[in-house]
Image 1: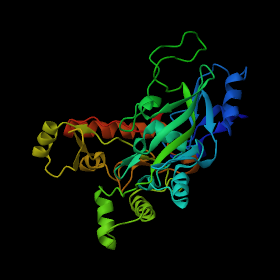
Image 2: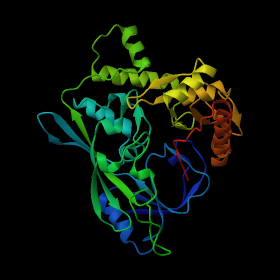
Image 3: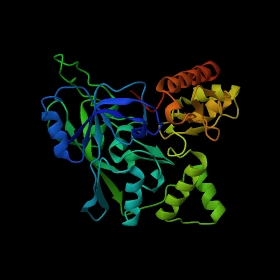
Image 4: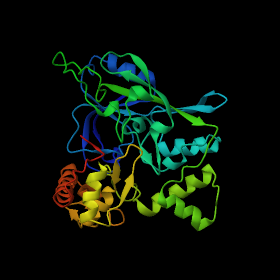
Length: 358
C-alpha cells in the first residue's frame, strides 16, 4: 500500500480539473485494501474510490481518503459448454480489457469499445453503448466492505443494475452510528470498493447491430455478417469521429443521461417538436436523445468560463482551458445547470448528470 499526501489530481481525472487529494492511497492488490482498512491513521475515515477519473467532476480539494484502484490482471477463470467466464482486475483500463477479450477470441464486449475509465468503475455506472449494457455481459464481481473489512461477491441481481445505475451509486439507508463510522444499509456508495469483475461471454455469439450508426457502417462497407472484431473497429471509428479524446480535450464523456418518458409524454413532445430524436424501449417507455435536446436549445459550441459544449456532440461538456488555466469544477457545474434549465423550460424534461460530483 502506497500512501501519498497533498497529491495533484489534474492528471487523475479526464476533465483535467485542478484539485488535490489530502491523502491518496494506491491499491495494487486486494491486500492493499485490507491494509488501508487496518491502518490506524486511516481507519474509519471517509473514502472516495477513484478509478480512471473518467466519470467525475471535482469541485474542490478532496478531503476523504482517495483510494486509487490499480489492481491489474485479465484471465479466463471458467469455460462451460455455453460460455467463457473472464475475470479482470478493477484497475485495468476498460478499452484494453475489451481488446484483450477479442484478441483471445472471447467476443461479446465489442460494442463497448473505447468507453473511457477502468473496469472497476464499469459496474458502478452500468456502462453501455450501441445497444449493449454491462449488465448484459456481467457474471459477478468481488468487492470489499470498507466498514467491516470483509470481502464479498455480488451477482447481477444483487448489483441492482439500472440505466447507468447500480447499488454502488446509492448511499446506505442507515446513517453512521458514530462520528468516525461509515454509514450502513443496502446502498454501497462510499461503503464498498470493487476489486475484480467477471464477464459471462456466450459462445453462441451474434452481432448487436440495432443502432443506426452501426447499420450505416454495415451498409457502407457491404458486410452482411460482420465479425466481433469488425464491430469493435466500427465502434472505435464512430466514437473517434463523434467524441473528443480526453488526452487532447478534457471531458467526462456523455455528461447527461438520455431521459425516458411515457408514450403519451413523447406524443405530446412530438406534437410540439416533430424532429425530436427518440427510441422505443422494451418496457414500453421512450428514450429521448439528450444530445438532441441540448442542441435544440442552442448550446452546441457555447461556453461558460472554460467549460464548453463540444461542437460535434452536444452531450459532451469539455475543458476549454489548459494547464494552470484549466476549467474548474464550479464552471462545469454552472454550465451543466444552465443547460438543465434551458431543456426544462423548453421541453419540460429534467436532465440528470452522469458523472459523480465530488
